[in-house]
Image (tube, rainbow over the protein chains, first blue to last red):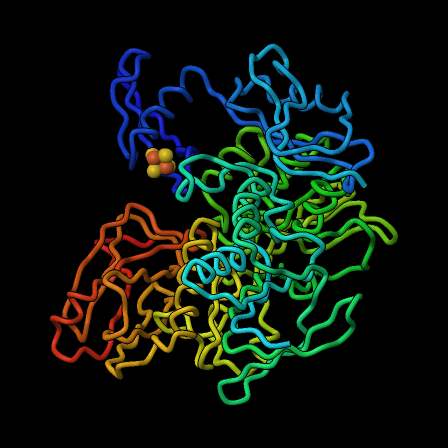
Length: 122
Length: 428
Ligand code: SF4
């Protein structure tokens, strides 16, 4: 039994339209990708979808009340919501620098949450 | 104050232009930024997806900006924050800027060259003509983005977004992640104005419906938004009676596109392209005012900051060449024309003698096309035809023109870029 799944690659802003051919539930072929990352994405998306999460963390004594953060690498899509909730529970002291780890091993994903902007003391 | 080069705007375009100009040897330069930090709009774009072309890694907006800010500081490029340019005029080759800030008040700067890098702003509700009162709870998507991402404040809990531009899509995800309920995104056109990847990862990932060919016809509530009425529109974009649907919400975000911020360019009297809202420029990104260059979103609205940086670097290099007296025209000028399906081209003309070996031409199409081709012709002769699976107004396209192929042509006059559809091609 073969079936085709249409996906949009989100690995870069080109957004290639991918066609994934499934034979008996197994991925047989990926077409439509401009680069190898597209094929990789299709396989991942159908077996273990992952996302990078970007959000905010509250900052104490900073020039801004919040600092933007991201997961240092992608995490399972199903954990995105928990990850953001966990961030709401914490507050970090200023100054914050790009790359500072604000939360280790977020929600047991093995991935750290790192700051993505500098926030000086107020 | 006298400077060789003044760069108006300290966002991604201004920073990249300044760095390129300094690296090309311009000593006396200055960046003027009206906000309280460098980086422009990138500071509030905390999502990832920036810099894949430039740095081969996926950065967030503030990280992307920081790379350029760091470099500008290392190079010792001077800048002034909280500083507004209120007037720009050209007197012969001399440019005069009237500038204002709190510390120094109002003063004048004379510059030999100027780079316009003011960026763009959002279309406002006034331009959209939605009837009803003006209750609280209506924001442009960019304003909401600044509230949420820089000030840590949520504009509301139940949200409807009108317009599917990228900022609206990104905010649908941001607000959902921060605990709001985004009920739907309504888009007037039959296609989205945003990138496909944003539809996937900002809407589909969270089950937020995208209603194409829909608009907001009424806003309920006197003091605070209590709900909106949406309706389907016909082929002429007019609401179809009987298709109204009421949606309760406390917040309406408007993401209805961006327009270059060109009051200064207009005041200067630079020739403007009504399609882009930005000035006409030649291959050196110079406006029709000698020594005044433009790059980034003030020239035409981009979807990728990487291309803004590239364009701005070119503007910085060209401004440096101009200051060295190395940007003399050769008179062998070819005009570029956007035809069938193509809305505009940047640049709008090029000097064959002066152009670099390869010239990037950027443009947008006016409709969605499938299995079409971009055709480039010179005085009726087809130079090349590039197949495209999908072309959409939301995605900027580019082609490269080679100096060699134009040198080979016999006194070329006009290059035409158009969309060629094969068979039924065009999508309704
Ligand atoms: S396939 Fe490659 S080029 Fe296409 S969207 Fe994915 S990463 Fe980008």
